[in-house]
Image (tube, rainbow, N blue to C red; front, side):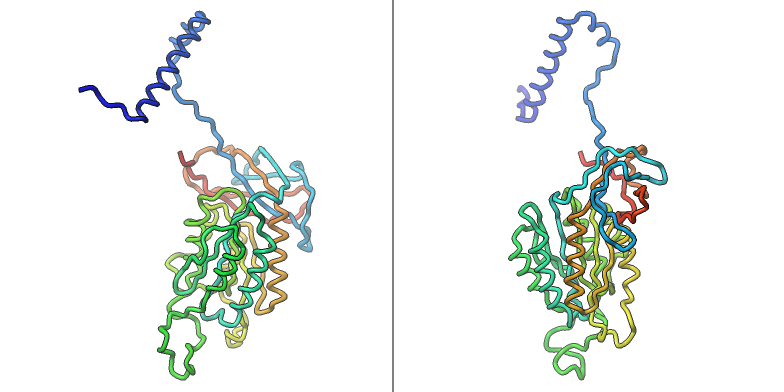
Length: 343
């Protein structure tokens, strides 16, 4: 019985025959090349190395003001301390943006959550264009995707409004003396901040292209994540995502302890991904100003790309450094992972 050809097999066979015919015609037209072809091992597949590392970054003066209008010649880039040749450079601020808004709905956010919803919604109206997309995640004792990728600002605002304080207590069983409400203490069941960042980077942003950023509205306090802050940082770097953290909390919640114990970890997360921490407390005006600053930074990004001299794609971490010849401050991610390209 003859072998049945599947559509895929037919296509491969036709391509093989076409290639053989082309080689035959070429040999007939140029007989001198026949001997050369016979002496050389034929190359069946030609692969072009398109391994380009792409970086989005901001440039600021000593006072933190953004510096526009710089050129390729103003920068030098280093990977693991070795200079790299810049392949391309643009000062574009209108490239498509994929944005994740991540809102902390744990007990410590009880008195600032409504403020975050209002200002966060106004920010999305301000920043998103027709070619941008965003999603909304809330995190507390669980991590919940409230709105998948969309360009619809109304859906995003509705998703923010769905965020509710969740301390893990079962309704109707408040702690003694709470007057019908759980006592606002650090959530015993957890605030899964690191897990949320990992899931946002790995599950939402890793397969997206272009500019990507996460904005966390939180006090920075993680309670009970299965992952560590280094796992969250690694996932964000592998997704090529910038992370901003807006430290929002009612200081009265902390009973005079004077600060948020997670701020140091949040600085690690943001500095290594090219973002930053902005401390807004429980002040509406400070939160609005912080969002305005982020909007300006996202619109003022430089984009630089290079083909690394170390072209081994072994999954290892490579340290990055961009230097400006005018000694301006560079706000960029600290490194990347040289992962094999997907075939």
